[in-house]
Length: 146
View 1 (tube, one colour):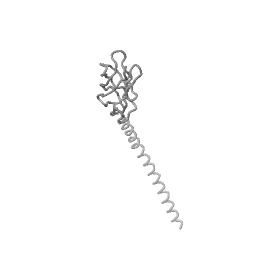
View 2 (cartoon, rainbow, N blue to C red):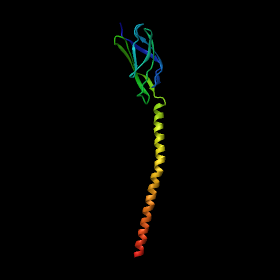
View 3 (tube, one colour):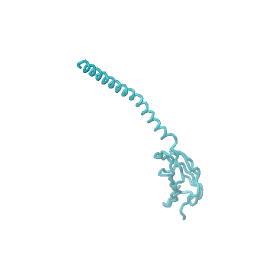
View 4 (cartoon, rainbow, N blue to C red):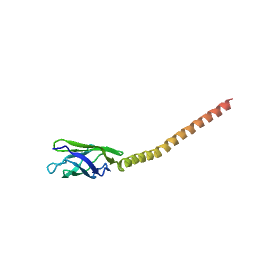
């Protein structure tokens, strides 16, 4: 028996939420029996099916840690523990989720700033005006004494 070998697969990218149907061509994937374990990054693939010793398909799993384009290794491990690895072969695309979370945080900070800043500025201006009045009164009193 030979080690599995990955030659090509398609497509080479998909969303971090998983669900991408991937077709792998290679050799020694086995026939019938148990399907090999397939991993994209550290995410186990789902619905792995061996169609022939040279063709298998799977559905990518979820890769929640990816926040930007992440190049991932794809590994195929047979029932005997022998594996084939295609290095940096699949790209997880982050989609909109990380950006939406960041935009929501920025929106909250902006609203908080627009609510707090005017109150703080108003309080500072009022305190400054009070100090100016106190200084003027003190200056007039000093001038009156002289």
